[in-house]
Length: 414
Image 1 (tube, rainbow, N blue to C red):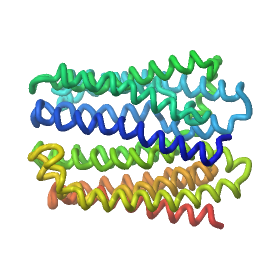
Image 2 (image 1 turned 90 degrees about the vertical axis):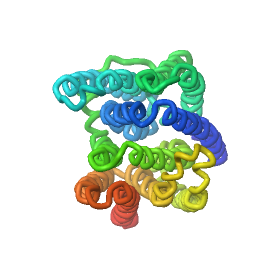
Image 3 (image 1 turned 180 degrees about the vertical axis):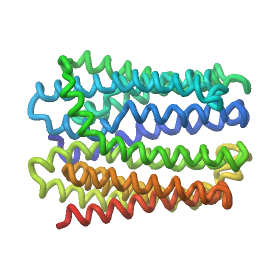
């Protein structure tokens, strides 16, 4: 097991890599908004939101459940079996997703105008089905995985500036953004094979069902989060102009990119360690949890304050067209703090430190917030439009953090 110093080094290294991972899209996004104009970017944005649901289905929460299972595996043979069953499950989910997507595109009239662009985004699902982050994370090789993803983005995303030149190039833009996931998957899989980190075993239906059963609560929680965050954009489509939707989505993506830049590396490094220690030395696991919680709180609080204070710089960084996004960024500026605390008490406190009961509590929090948010959005959008939805997005994340904390206090401090 790595020392705390090594893991802090991994965290710092991952923050740098995450910076590259998220700075590139932030550079590309304003370019696409300018070149494609609202109509063309609307095709890309809608298709991305549509595909996200299928990507979540293929991932099925394995990045959490699989990581914990791999980290706690007793030997290499057990690890190989877990990996083979999860990998097979992801392929089955890819086939089901593709069939369902085809049916929807050919039966729902409103989706048909987006058909070509959605198919151009489909490689994102393929890449997701062939990506095994849970293995890299579970065996402590997340730094390697992040490097591979960074290389894939550095290679692919600059092609957008070469091939997307006019408003009608939205299909090309969708394809180039989604093909990154395939490249990253192929590169990471090649590394697994070369280093012989895992040996493929013959999967069993029982094993596949067991892995999916273990992951269902985590899948439902992740899906619930996506449902209310992605659905907000779809609901806004009924009441707001494309420009207004552009303000909201750009603000949301900027804020969440900064969250992922700082919080995700900490999660990726320490989730497997706390998961492993929770089964061997629970007291030490809880000590690490408590110590790092204070760091997460401080980092995310500073980030929230910085986002609020620097929001007026958006037009200087990305162009005058972003002047209207300032109010949205400021409303969303507290989300980093809420996501950091909610994620820490949830993923670390209820899942990594927890058991089946606490994992179910983790799932129920997201299901509850998803139900509340969807009902509230339907009521808020007609009256308060995009500003109301923006405030609801921030409040939803606050509600997640509060409920995760309450559940952690209920189950883990008794």
